[in-house]
Length: 337
Ligand code: 13P
Image 1 (cartoon, protein in one colour):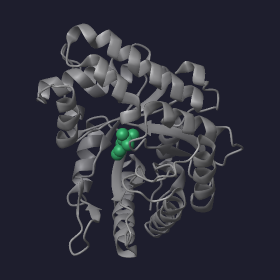
Image 2 (cartoon, helix red, strand yellow):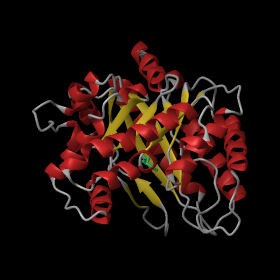
Image 3 (cartoon, helix red, strand yellow):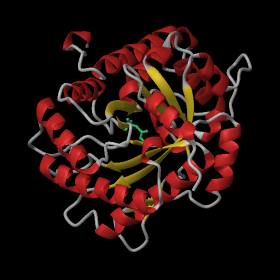
Image 4 (tube, protein in one colour):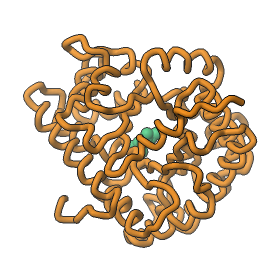
């Protein structure tokens, strides 16, 4: 297969020091849920206004290297008519695109899911590239329960992730490979580590079979944390140590960066974990962030759908971006909270 030299350049730039990724690719269902929580109707205009507010934050490019967009947003224009990918490029930020079509029930495997979206993906990649996207994301969802995940579910999702990653690289886009082990449940941190290690191990075996160029991709994993309902919660240091142990066992050093999802952790905790992780160096890869909720929660609340709150929302986003930018080198201080 012909190798695309640009892939490594794009992947490396996404994890440049002091910077990380903003995930703003909520599907229609998810953004509607988030808007309902603050009493806003989800329309194409309200979604555009909110996302324009985020992406036009002054100086956002200082700590944000890329933004993952939803299909609708990649095609939208700002209120003054600038295409969203152009707005990002002006900020020195790479536009990315979520290409999966969501996690759907895996037939005959109760409580397990398989991510859909491979059919027609080659053509969609060609279109996304023409619209300006330079990287992509696909999320697989793995739930922990007494009898799950099954090895079949892990394998099916790893296979789909690898097929997606191959099509992305073939089209010249950097794939972000996201196998998310959910925090839902009462499982222990040890169980999360055991499952995540199996999942990521399986993902890299599939990526290898699919001839993925490791230098031109990023991994987006969960951190190793106990289930939300586990009576024994873990310290920041325990999370950092378990996460690093798991990643060292499973992620080849040829991968330029690992960009964590926040997965329902509070924004401050997600920053503290990243900070602690980066203090455990030297590390074979860049450890960065690709947070959705942990970057947006405060901004969304500040905005609340009102024009007069745009500046406050942008300030809230910039604050989290800066804190996480500092956590990239272990320099975040709790005082920043
Ligand atoms: P969270 O950081 O809110 O988990 O979202 C990241 C993401 O992109 C999930 O696919």
